[in-house]
Image 1 (cartoon, rainbow, N blue to C red):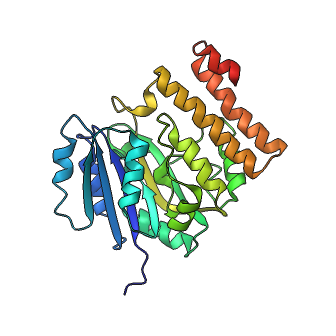
Image 2 (cartoon, rainbow, N blue to C red; image 1 turned 90 degrees about the vertical axis):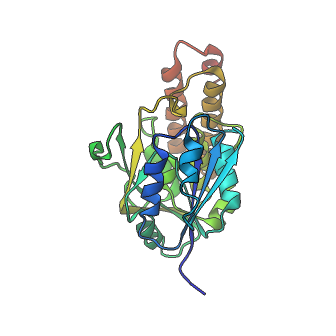
Length: 275
């Protein structure tokens, strides 16, 4: 019986016909051999289903089709179908460097109470555009230190593909909140980190974050999505305060909430007043 830990890549896919093959190819090309991938097609209305079905012959990829229920529900479905001792949530339009998983597994060094993090950079058309500008959180850190530092400018990068999560930690922190849509990764990521013993940075792992996609959830500003962003910020900042109530964590939380006011002014005055 292999003692090499199995990694599970959990992917929600919605109307990602143009990008899902490239994303899956970056997963199939991982150098870590003990890897399974569960992709949930969340009711796509384009050709995503056909693209994903092309990969069903790959023994390490499982494709699930369901009616549209939202990204959080799709992530939870993928997680529930997975069996790996290490878990990564990965969007169906981004890319991973070839040694991403291998390097993060080694970085964790068997810990079940830490998460591994990675570098990231944005691109629009071609991954060669990505420029990996160093950030203050690109180092091993205590979880509260990481959050306080990342929230300094009110716009942290907490994309879920950055994390490699031991399953016991995932079970303690809990699944994705299916009532959230916009910036649900903020609430999830904060809850995850505040249940951990720390973040272990993996210098060689690189996430290529695709931006400017038409219909991308992060660009939506309907009332229901704005309310999701509001609740994600309220719940996420409370997770930090529950872990440490101090001047530095209150200031970090205030930075995040104030950024919402700047982002949506002069609209949604009721939510701004509540903040």
